[in-house]
Image (cartoon, rainbow, N blue to C red; front, side, top):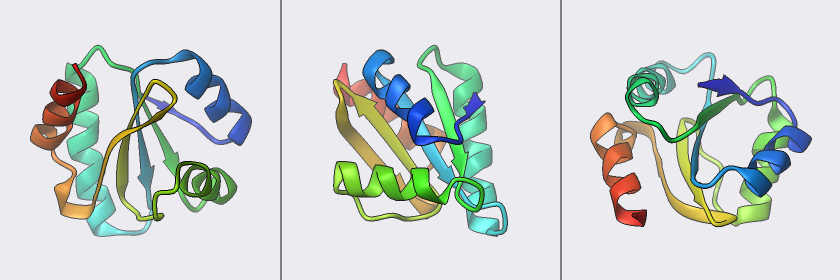
Length: 108
């Protein structure tokens, strides 16, 4: 799992990796921390690339993703990108190992 901080880094991923997960993570929210733990466990068990951004540190990137892909910003928020588009996304308590695995199975 790798941290992404810039729009440039993200755009390189979006052009190259397929599929990949991204989580928008708040450093101060307890709900976000629980979702991040679920995501981290999932990331350690999957071969699909998993990335994250800390919303407080990468606000412009978070906004870019929301605007470019027309998905309302939420935090925490998990997004599965495939073929240059959003294949699935969920927020808050809906981010679980089970939901992440199911999302991946849906696109395969």
